[in-house]
Image (cartoon, rainbow, N blue to C red; front, top):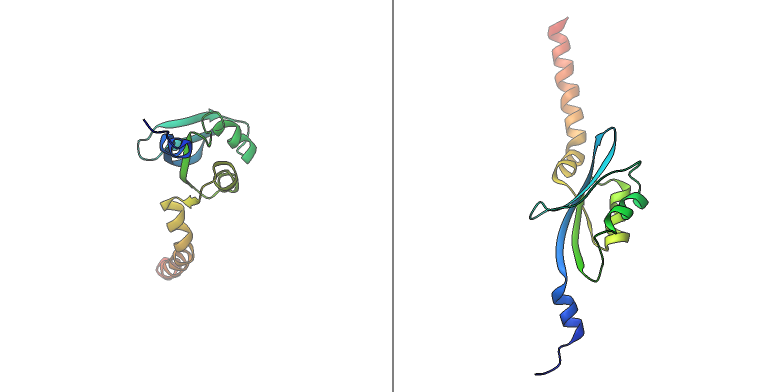
Length: 125
């Protein structure tokens, strides 16, 4: 049998994942990181804050670059999560659909509310 190329073995043994991360609030923030394709919860922890350092503390318990290849991190675009993607996981940070659409329609929505509101005021006088 021939020798295997260690680089190829390492690369083929890595698990490539797409991760979603967000915070929920029931008192203190609960930091949640989920594998998007399966819904597997990598981490879910009640923390004092939601800074990059706190996120990295939670993620570094399961993420090692030798075993995981994070393709993307989907989030609401919070600075700590963008930094986690770029600096910690070494992958692109992608906005979730809600925040992507919200950001792109915010001006249109405000204008529509202003127009609708002004028309309703005419009828309410």
